[in-house]
Image (cartoon, rainbow, N blue to C red; front, side, top):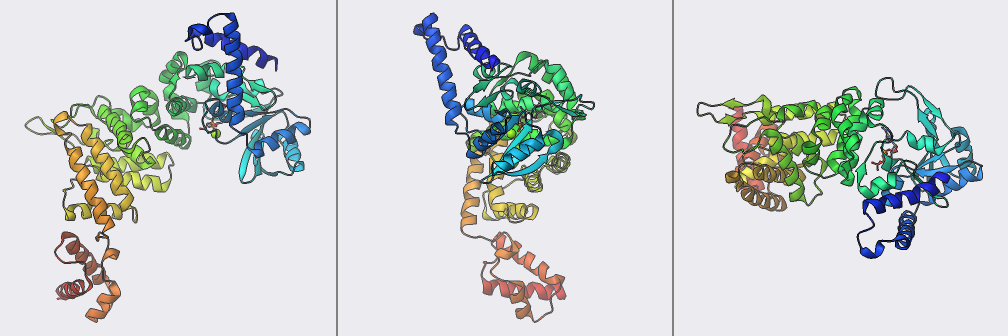
Length: 511
Ligand code: ATP
Ligand code: MG
């Protein structure tokens, strides 16, 4: 507690020195400083209080303390509550060994799951909310830069906070005792900085994933990475090679879902390249094309920005992955013609293959990978503002991701618009044409126009009856041809017409 009492005012004084609270003249002077300090303290405590600790978390604290142990809320909840953001999961750190935590929680009527006994974690569950409760611990040596070879349980929350990655993640809070902030996390929150706890180099050497976590928190919170920590992020990004792809995948998802567009690729290139080495060849890769005024990587950054612009910052995850990976095949497909113009024939197919391999390696969810890969494959497919052309892109999307074309076609249009806006100025008008394509896709979908066999107003059974033949592979072929003709507008999607035409196609096939 002593540390809390001493640290809190020292932050406020620090903030005053930095001018954070000294913007208005009436705040100058000792009396005003004291007043400002008290106000700030009250304000922060109110913010923590108003974040309304869940009933489950309150019960966990009470249960552990009733059994004679110390317990604190730690980590992300404290950070987010102080920011006035809606805090997520609650983590509790306690002096109780996990067996005794479990006993105390069960005695207090809470359901308990042993989620990570080896790391001292049990999860208390109440009203479907899980509260992870972990014994104060420090990590043993990280022999492989991935995980500690062992953990050691310790007696003080300060030691537990010291093993955490960044100062803003290394604060503890208790509804009665207030904030415990031994590493200046609050000052860094105020200054909007991600700073490693302790020596950044040593901390990243212990666990290379922290390089990417620094980028994720900076992206999500809109913070800067503090100078020394930033230097270490750049220098030690290659440590990510030692980290499991799955953990990298999880952090990358967080980075993309922060919705900062091209920021990570522009500003934290080393970390992003270490996480996905296939991104690196795009840097400085000249396109030798009148359509492009930027190298591939700068173009990709811009597409990522525009995806956020066109979706109001709420782009789906597949759209963000597609923006990142859509041109990943370009450096491998450049051909320069006699006139000196660069062409990237086949880059969407190459990109699709590479995106698929990358997303598999990162162990990303199957559905996310399928959607992303479909968008990468089709991002450059020419579409005309005609019924047939738009229905055909819907059919292609449906083939790659069955049942998802209505949603994916809207996303494809976003990528196409963003792609156009990231070209040379003379070629950006295409974005306006895409508006027309998008509206047309919506109209066709709303009208139930056919782009799948099942949209035809005739079934296989109808055709069997009409032709009097036995089922066989011919049936699928007839239905596919009927669909092609209906999409092209050569025949109406109407039962009688489809039946007559179907019988004629069947006769031709059998002849
Ligand atoms: P989020 O809202 O994204 O979950 P969080 O702060 O809860 O944010 P987690 O990844 O859930 O982040 O981790 C919980 C806490 O555990 C962190 O706040 C941090 O204190 C600590 N932590 C997690 N991973 C590491 C790591 N690799 N190295 C050091 N500390 C870590
Ligand atoms: Mg968390």
